[in-house]
Image (cartoon, rainbow, N blue to C red):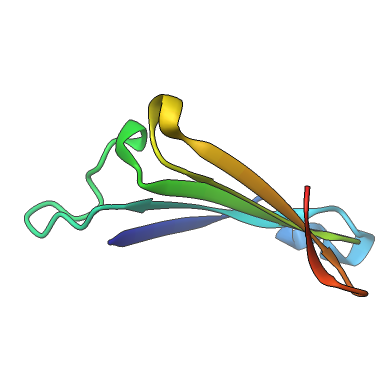
Length: 82
């Protein structure tokens, strides 16, 4: 698999509690043309937002078979599905 990720804008604003985060995409490995897969052909994709809370969302599958699930960090019980 190939995993591409990118930070969301806002890292320079951490001192004033503005949310920041990361996005990512996972695709089948293509040895002859790495990282050339179209976004519509990703195996999974998601994002994470860091601020006063931590949220993580992932989508797995394609088309009508795709499913997304979100998690929110809760210090009492680790992660909760949202």
